Image (tube, rainbow, N blue to C red; front, side, top):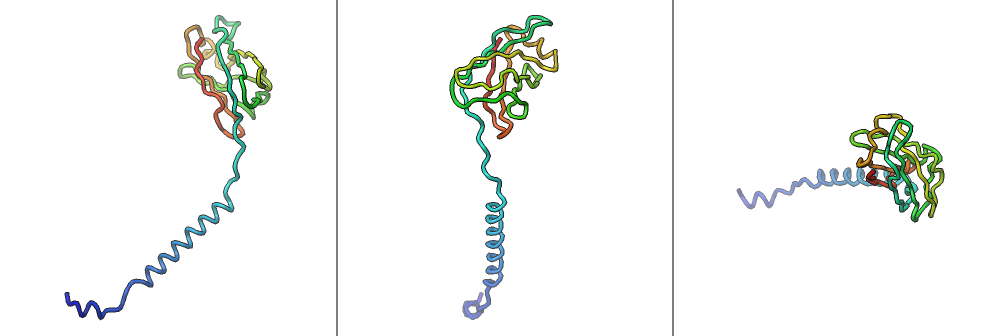
Length: 154
């Protein structure tokens, strides 16, 4: 290659690179401004609570249900009065169902309350016998966050 010819050629690609950079900067700025203007605000956090959950009695017959005890050791109160605020899910083996926990109402620090595992699926109740492990999850529906995830052995 001829070095004199190379030095005499003053044409370059700087206008093309300049246009590409300007478009890229414009797109990045538009995305940043759009996300800050239309971004969702922070949601309220889930209640933070320390719960001691233990099995009181396993399922022992058609007229009895497995009973679980909830003891609130500290933190925020948990509202169980409505299914739209807090949901309690129990999993026994491969069967998962929502537990009716409305009887717990508002569980505050120092309180101890018990509920029975009342499922719509009677097969799930009958499998909560002595020696069975039940996974219990308490979910705050307002923030879609997990409050408690605990395995309970009967």
